[in-house]
Amino acid sequence: MIKSLTFAAALALLAPAALAEPTHVMVRAQALDAKFIGDHMGGVEITLTDARTGALLAKGLTRGGAGDTPRIMRAPRQRGEALSDKDAAGFDAVLDLRQPTLVRADGVGPMGKPGAAIHVSSTLWVIPGRDVTGDGLVLSFPGLVIEPAAAPAADGTLQVTAKVTPMCGCPIEAGGLWDAANYRIEATLMKGPRILAHAPMRFTGRTSEYEAALPATAPGRYKLRIVATDAKTPNAGMVEQDVRIPRAR
Image (cartoon, rainbow, N blue to C red; front, side, top):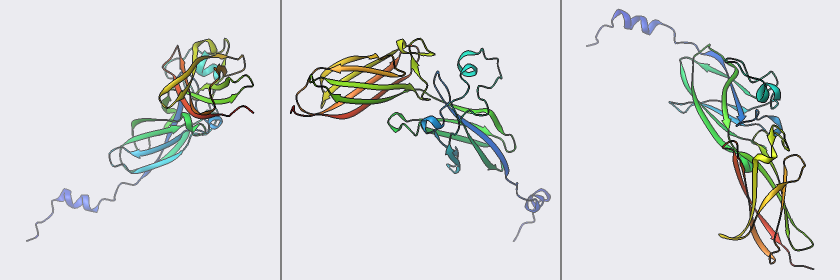
């Protein structure tokens, strides 16, 4: 026997399904103690998913510039004031939502520096029709990008250089906003787990560049490890690369 529907249930069956409402969600990636990560560093890949179902909602790269230096790094900021300007990098996603959705934002980058890329995530309730604009959801990226180079010198030493920057590519300079004196960079030459040589790297005076000379070592293949830390923040980075020291001719 089929039971009769209540009046409320009958109305529910007749009512149209909720329509999806396009909703903008701005997501930005900001280097810790620095600026936004944009085109200069290859951007950050942003993936937005429904945190409860795992359904993909949007995916793309942060695009644009690093932002206005005085606004981000120098000017006193009042509560509610935006750090970003119209040119600051971000990913503006448009989500078709039918109901309030807990959105998970995953950021991976900087994509142009894969050796330094990290994963940052956060969640945010997004309400259909309530755009998330302005600074939007800002993912903070701690770390340092290290780009090493090494070459044997005529005297047998291994000459090591490294370009070091925050994740936004901002310049490290003597007395600058990112002061070279606050960074400690160290180079280590290894054979398997064994440390053969270790030396601090000094700032060369050229933007973001450090150098060191490691003692002469027998010809062979080795691992060069460079570690960078910032005395003022949690920012740190590490990179390893294979190096080959050839036989003298």
